Image (cartoon, rainbow, N blue to C red; front, side, top):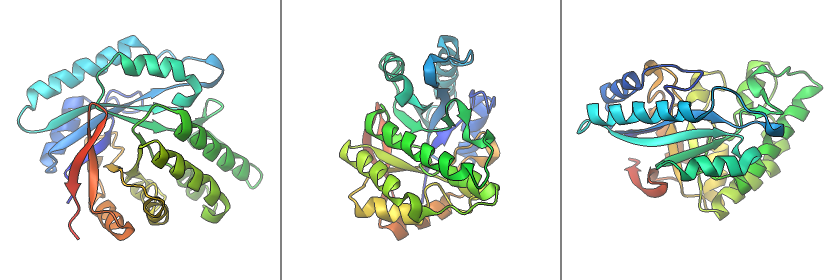
Length: 269
């Protein structure tokens, strides 16, 4: 039902898996297309981290071209990047984007004030502050960032569940609505990130409720990604994602080429 994985990591600092291994895993699992979307993080207050630089981008493109040559005729390999917090450094992000022929860009929020949300201290006092701040960052990113699809738009729920806190969708429904409206008004899309299923949230990010709301508001563009950082997770839980998309009213997912949405895989009802 789904033959393309649009969120995969290889040379990212939290993966470090040969890109060839990720591509071979995709072929072994019956995929016909992947987007290799390694991390590139931006930081508040003008801070830079030594990993994200020109040499890192060169390493990514060299690996991509080797894989395209090696797997020609077996797998369509789209170029991509997952940009974290790119709304914090719009000019810097734009300069990178315009200098490379990307097919697909994910815009994500991973950090608040340069601290990864996975490393924050979740308590009764901090949970409302962290969650609200997370969604406010996503509102700004969705309105002003240069991306094609937003990544795992309710990522925060993974950490709330892990720490024993309720997700409280209703409390932040207006924030999520604004994010979805920003996406739709700009002709952008969202991804269904299946890592939530295997990493504690119990459902993809976002889940059925948000997918239905996105469709209700007029959203049409959706991709599916495993967010895999190792070969075993490529295309993980895609059957569940397809079922949820059909339940939400979608009949296809979108593919990208040179940052333009193109007809993708039809979902069988």
